[in-house]
Length: 541
Ligand code: C2E
Ligand code: MG
Ligand code: MG
Image 1 (spheres, rainbow, N blue to C red):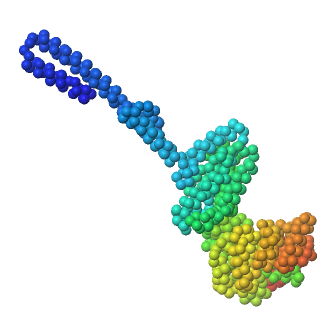
Image 2 (image 1 turned 180 degrees about the vertical axis):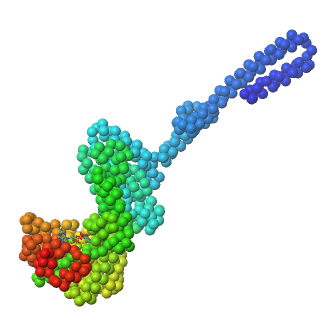
Image 3 (image 1 turned 90 degrees about the vertical axis):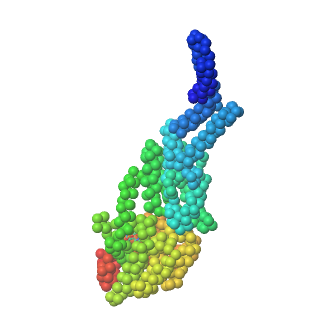
């Protein structure tokens, strides 16, 4: 406006002023000149304004477009066909804003590290998938997946190694999926997956198994081999929820329970799961203090040698008496302790206490007996296990000839050669080894002859029906003859009745353990049993 005014009015007004001051013509003439000058300046101003408006229009449009994008995120709609400078300005503006928008979209919807969709985008896509599932009357499964040891890897090898691991994990997951499946990284070490168009809940299992199998292959991060375990929780639409949030929450609950139960497993959501998880969390928290609060103690169950009917050993069995929760069965808390690693200090305490007790009995003049102690597979993960056991033997002064360690078949799943080496070292030290719960695990019979063990303990599930069920009897007989041919001793667990006792004895079993003779009892009660001896049944004790 100012430009228009200055451009047209200043020269005209100067001219007019000059005319008025130098010209002495009539008043009428002066008025006429003034009128013409006024019309001329007004016309000039309008024409200048018009010209300026046309000249500045693209700039103003571009300015408004930029304002609209920054305020309302509205993408520009400027003409891009002009080739003059302002035309190029508009085209550049359109292109730059669109590129910027793409970058912003990516940053807000995708995970920087893995390039996978983030939780917001996953939920958005899941919502659409849910609508399709509702329309097509099909099931949809949501999986919550958590890596187990990312924090340890970050601490041990640094964040960069952790990041590489996450990328590799994301790639392995992507490779396991169909193109219609959804995958997202929703938290540090947590992924979300969804599979649509399922006819039954079990149809999600092939994917779960594929994922577990792909994660069972060793990761090589910075040339270091790493083993990663994952836990999967599954929630299925419509059974476990019809809303995105509900399905995700339930899948997460199932995952947390899966995580607490075992390494590398999956778990479907169940209605009572929240209560179970709550109970587990309570047990987990309480278990952390159980040792220091002296809530843990041992019971001892006799092992009876069948030839002379006498107690030749005991098995030390851990007991947890909580002040409010009462007696908590080892069947419940040992798996928790195994999952969170507390089994290591608990196991050491059990070994130390059992060894000490054995010595006390011997020093009291009772007949010397073998002390069997259960050793969890988790304890084998300690690189100094053998030294720790040696140290406890030294500390307690226990005669090594009386120590037996019970291990289970789960030990022989991973890293078999390493396990065999450790067992061999223990055996070289003079410790006897028993394979506990035989027949329930994964032992390959072929491997059995390579395991440095002395005794097979037949699981009580076989013994239970040995009289009533011919199939069970056949399996038990086969285990006994297998053990004999491998020159192993055989102990039958869970013998409860006279019939079972006689059957087992007739098959040539060496020792038995079970309620028929005695339940696990405290140390003083066991001392009395050792004094009186065993005559044949629980009632006789
Ligand atoms: P296990 O090592 O196989 O121990 C034998 C289990 O069978 C004991 O259960 C014992 O009470 C039970 N049992 C013995 N005779 C009979 C019978 O005639 N009938 C029946 N129904 N049961 C019988 P418990 O004490 O509940 O222990 C269960 C499991 O917990 C043990 O199975 C073992 O795997 C684990 N456990 C117990 N103490 C320890 C420990 O100190 N360390 C580790 N790592 N695991 C332990
Ligand atoms: Mg045992
Ligand atoms: Mg057993």
